[in-house]
Amino acid sequence: MLENAHGHISMSTWTFLSNHAHVLLLLGQDPDLRMRDIAEKVNVTERAVQRIVHDLVEEGYVDKVKEGRCNHYAVNFDAHLRHPLEAGTSIRDLLSGVKLLGEDQD
Image 1 (spheres, helix red, strand yellow):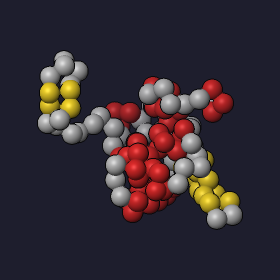
Image 2: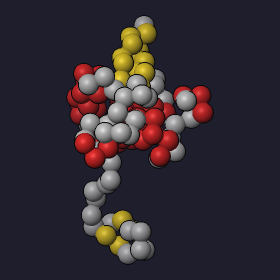
Image 3: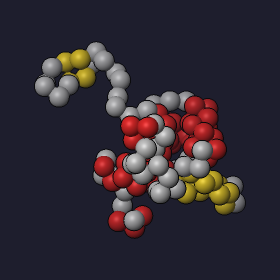
């Protein structure tokens, strides 16, 4: 059970942001996160995170760079959201809007 904005207890588990958005937000915060850590934070399986990252890379929102045995993910902060309602909104705007974009990524 969760407490909603009015202080009432709710059984609902939906959120405003999708798992794709959650993964993108986390990679914007820390481009060296492991899939396992992302999965734990988003509360999905590691395989789900792998599919999401694949989607984000394929669509140009994230670049994946292999560094030794680890991956580094570079978020394309200038890419724009896909849905027509948000088409004028960049990833930078999204991350700034949820206060996860640091000064060094401007």
